[in-house]
Image 1 (tube, rainbow, N blue to C red):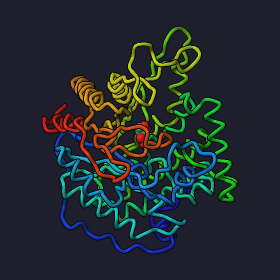
Image 2: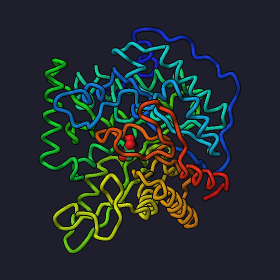
Image 3: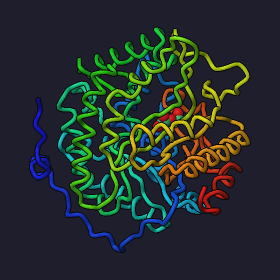
Image 4: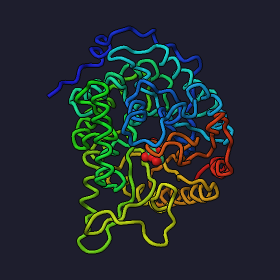
Length: 434
Ligand code: BGC
């Protein structure tokens, strides 16, 4: 059993000293009322995340990735342009990730320059009236962390907590809300989704990880999205608890939660395995979310489960470009599920649609707002909706082939072009309550 070091020990034990946190120049205010925003992650938008596990895997042979992330959207340098767009749409919050691989490029070595960068991003959010909602981990980890076994080895939890403490020490006074992990249960969901659980997909992922282990001379190489779900999930539960405590220790005084991948699970027919699938997908995370300040619900579709497991999409229901059903009713269902089973304040921290037809996206946004409004009318405490994503960004194994963005990004020039669907979200945001 590992014993969690105290915050003081964590900070004293880390190599390198950070410059004392700069006092924020101006006090900032939390927006009143409903939060309207967009969500994005570090690896998918910043570009050049060369020190991460994903960068290595994307350029591996074999690889599960269609494209390398490369420059992504170059948001590391163009964040003011992105924030200007978000503010121009009348939004009042902005969810983004800080990248552990940049902040701690080698074990125990924390980069003042990287933390300074995120201070500038946070200050730029406040300057535009956007409450910054910070994700401490959105799937990617530093390469050195993957090489030592990632979240498959128990003390991975302590290293994550140390990163959380160090980042909070510098960034805490400027953070509006935070979550430890993005979709903490994603590794468990992989056990059920056919596109990951199929024999071919699993064999390809195993071959990729084996090759990465050889290439880096690291027999225990483990990457969150491709490792052993049960081992990873147990260590991540510990990492979440310790990370949450480290962030809550401050400085700063803001809600700290966790976001979960929550799809509507519908049981179909007699002896269906829906209850079993639900237990597999959530593992210990419902319990963990009950101990958080809030839960971030992230919903993209529904899963229909019969006596044999996951069913194919229902005939007649339109599909998104991702191959799953375009089914916005799922959003109301998962918010109700979170209200019933978790009972903490709810934010819809992600929902969106992968489609090259922006009019479909516009209708999806309207439908989302209708679902949220119904839940509020039923008395459910849901106070934010963040569309995934602001930009057409790096869609993991699908690379740049799938578009979720309100804003197109030209892959040659990285020029941003706002799509009409962005104005649909803007109109709702300007109207105020869903
Ligand atoms: C993830 C994002 C991803 C989105 C669309 C969510 O599960 O948090 O990183 O891009 O789904 O697939």
